[in-house]
Image (cartoon, rainbow, N blue to C red; front, side, top):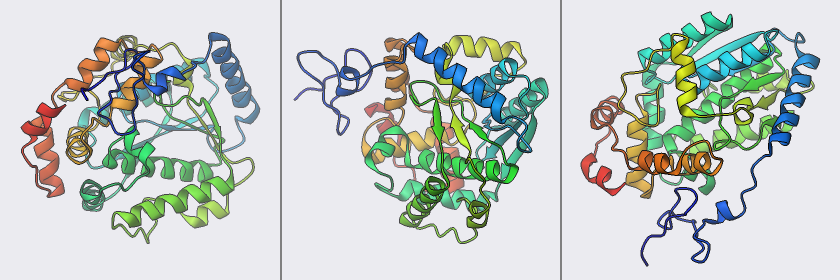
Length: 345
């Protein structure tokens, strides 16, 4: 059967688990998609403002913010502080060993502009290289849905970030953790955590690490059990305000560049901060046969945050061979003819 592409988003029938209705021409995600209305978004924003006012000042920081130094996180930090100037924010940048120099410069610049504290979470490069090497060599390390949302390497990296930001929130007694996820990436603006859920997520990630051959006995990647024991009530909540704001990539770039954010010299259409991303995409394509950004881009297109043509173009843009080879050399893994993989996209 020839490949069918959803008429609304960018998902196609060659992706495992994707069904396209021949009559409507839509994938099952688009057929059941109900976006938040403008009124619902406004109600969520009022709830978030109420939470900020109620719980700000109760800890060392009000917000632990995930700052990659990329355009979306830089914009979100700026707008968050602009809309809620009373918030005391600790911006945490995880240096995964592949963070671009521009990302660090941009992250520090945005903290300087917004008056937020900056914390760089670092680990030994060799430890991180071993982690990502094992993720690259793994197969089906994550549940199907997670595998569809991101590459194995990105899933590992994102999980470490989430674990360590929750850990920081508990240590700093911060009531909120904020990520710069768009509506296409996270449809849930407010996620209330609990001590039991945090413990469960920690144990689950520990098992996923073990599945790829990583024993995190020193709790470098997972939340330290000793920290969880000291969790207060209520537990931190995760907020995604960017998914409630009007969003366009052009507007975001225009805003942050106007503030002094420097566009990176990375030949990567899907990342403005990480030099590992092209290799992670290549590795995912080689293992599973579809682009790891397909679901994220489909979500952006479906929610109206990205034109469909632009989404299709992003999925078919060539990955950076120099970045793939550079990352492969650091990870000490073999690259099997990246040009062949690129032609399959």
